[in-house]
Amino acid sequence: MKFQKNYVISGEIICSTGLHIGGSKDSIEIGGSDNVIIRDPVTRLPYIPGSSIKGKMRALLELALDRVTNGGPCKCGKCEVCRVFGSAADNISVSGPTRIIVRDSFPTEETLKMWDESSDVVEGAELKYENSLDRITSRANPRNQERVPRGSKFEFEIIVSEYEGDSDNLGVVLEGLRLLEDSYLGGSGTRGYGKVEFRDITITERPAE
Image (cartoon, rainbow, N blue to C red; front, side, top):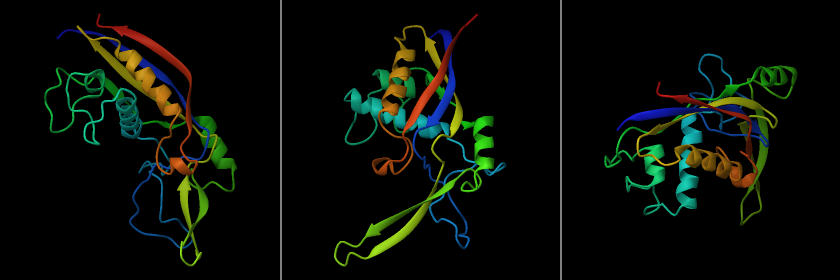
């Protein structure tokens, strides 16, 4: 299997609504949130893991192309989704390497300035307050969770490889991005979170030579 080229897709992810990609927390501060977002351990600022973008793109493509297997990821090892996104852990039938690399996405300088100037944003996050209701007593149970505020922007980069015999891996990835714009990224999407747009996209072709 001969490598032919890479496509480098870069641009910005714009949060059209608040974004919540969950993280872990060892302790809960007074007045803080018990439902925190993922943060860079060095800067303590939010980022978007490449695994979150890649996993959601794959899931949406499998649904769109009717490749879901028993409620889980496709394991055929032959379709375009398996070829581009790789095989499941228990399946080694995919020929050759995974064709896509999705980098972690970090906030732009413009976004860092916006966060710094807002009194409602702490370490890149706002607190969103919600109520859950007891269906029997109608008692409200207030809760809050962290989310990246609307209007935040993150730089993204995706590498798409093509090998001899491949067919339009780039097209598969671009379709995955389109489907993601029509869905949501992260958690609580059905409650309005996670609408994103991919903007200022550039695609650079890098042949093997």
